[in-house]
Image 1 (cartoon, helix red, strand yellow):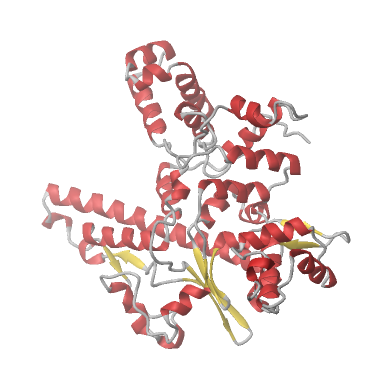
Image 2: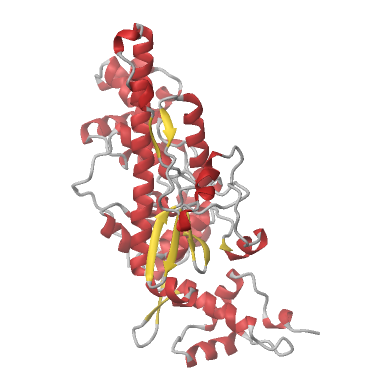
Length: 454
C-alpha cells in the first residue's frame, strides 16, 4: 500500500521554445484567448480575420461577424435568456486544494494514500505552498499511528508532480527544483540547474552569479540559459488554479450539436475566429522598402506565423480532447448526466499520447456546450464507485441521481440519506450511506430535517 518512487529513463516528446508559448495559450480561457487575438490584431498589421461563413448553421453570417464587435462576450440572437444559460452552466469555485484532490481521486492510489493526500492538501495555501514542513504535518496527524513518515513524504512527492507542478512544497527552492525536473530540457543541463538550486540557491537569490559560474565551471552564455529556464518557472504555482476562474462569464470553446442522427463537434468560431496572414503586406516588392521597413515586415511576419500556428495548435488540441471525451461519454451526450461513465485522466492521456498532467491542464477553464448544458471539460472526469457485482459508476452520475431523487421527494417527508441509499440500491447502485451524505453535501443540499416543510 505504499507509493514506490523510482527514477527511470523514458522517451518524451521534446518541447521547443516555440511550443512553450503554444502551451501557455492552451491554459487561457476563451475570454483570455479572444483578448490575446484582439491584442495581436492591434499590434501586428500582417494578421487579419478570414471573412468566411462556413461552419455556421443555416449560413448564419450574422453570428460569424459578431467576433468583430469590440465588446466580449459576443451578443446573441438566440431566444435563450441569460438566466437560462446560467442555470444550464455547471460551475463551482475552484481552489488549488480541490484541483489536486480531483486528480488524486482519479488516480490508482490506495484509499489510505488518498486519505493522506487529503490531509496534506489541507495545509496548502493559495500560492500552492505548505504552511508547515511535512515532518510537522506528520507529527500533527500520524505520530501515534501505523502510518510512517516515509509514506507521507511519498504521497507529498506524488502531489508535487501533479498539475500544477511544484505545489505542496515547503518553499520556493523546493518548488523550483521539482518544476525544473518536469521540464523537457536535456538531462545534463537539468543536472546543473539542480545543483545550482540545491547548493547555491542563497547565492542565486543574492545574485552572486560569479560564485555560481566558478563553482559549476560554466560559461556566461550557459549561465544565462540556466537563469532563463529558472525564471520561466512559476514562483506561485497554486495561483494558476486559484485565478483561473476570475472572470464574470463563461464562453464555451467547443460546441457539440446533434443534427438529426449525426453529431457535430466543432470549435466555437466566435471565441477564436479563423485568422491568416495579410498578403497585401507580403506582396510589396522588397526594393520598395527601406532596410528598416524590411526588418519590421520580417519580424512581424515571423510573429504572425508563430501566433497563427500556436492558435491552431490550441484549437486542434482542444478539439481532439473533446472528441475523445465524446467517444467515451456518448451516453451522456445522448441521455444526460445520469449516464456519465467513470473516466480518469489516463484514459484520455494515453489516447492523445500526452502526460496526464497535460490533460488536467487542458480541462481547466475550458468549457463545452452540449444539448444538456455548458460544462467544464474536467466535469467529464470522475472517479468510479464499484458495486459488489463489479459494475462501476461515475461519481458525477450518482450525484445527479441523488439530486433528482431529492428534487422529486415529498417535502413534508423528505428522504433521509439512508432512504436514498435504499432507493439507489433498488436501481442497482449499492454505496455506503456516508458516501450519500458526502455527495449530498457537495451538491449544497441540506439534510432531510432541514429540507422538511414546516
